[in-house]
Length: 100
View (cartoon, rainbow, N blue to C red):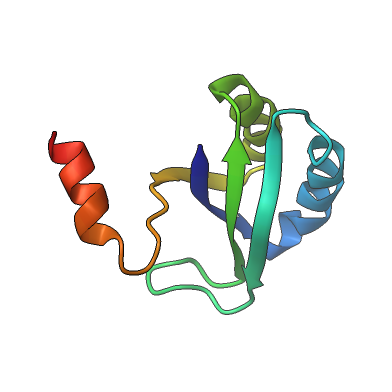
């Protein structure tokens, strides 16, 4: 299953996050497909905040927990949003499948 990830952290905690992120990057059952770090905070975010947006694929909840719980312990705010991948031009077909 694919998830959109949004991780927000204060700049002064970034060295701790980087160390933990390196450790959890090798956890089995989770694959980072893409990741972007935004240096400008989003509206409503605190000053001096970094926001990383990514897409990960996970086999199960245990893989997600093993990766993101340590990240939260260093002070990051983590949001995991399940996403449904729909090919361009296939929205109506997918909608009919879910409607039954």
